[in-house]
Amino acid sequence: MNNLGGSSYDAARGRLRTVMLAAALACAGSLLTPQSFLPLKLFFTIATILLFATIVFIIVRECRCPHCGKIIFLGALSATHCPRCRRSLTTGKKYKKSKK
Ligand SMILES: [Zn+2]
Image (cartoon, rainbow, N blue to C red; front, side):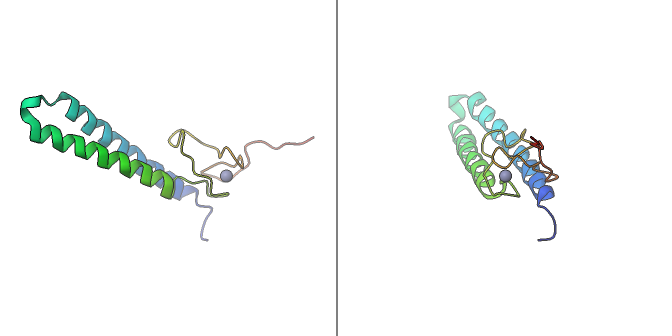
């Protein structure tokens, strides 16, 4: 391993954000396109489904904790720490030092 994998999580998150934006646009496009433009509406609908499939694919493939491998499914864009091992997803530092 060359690094802790934090930068790859950042890169995956950047891709995820782009695809989510595209999916939102495609979804809005399909909703705003009137029935009379059925082929265009169909195109947007299919694009939305494909983009959502891509989002799930990116999350499952790439939005994993670099330390324990847990998939960060909920809050993949805003999460800064892994819910399982509590390490930072970008720097690998522990969230809290539990000293007793
Ligand atoms: Zn973890």
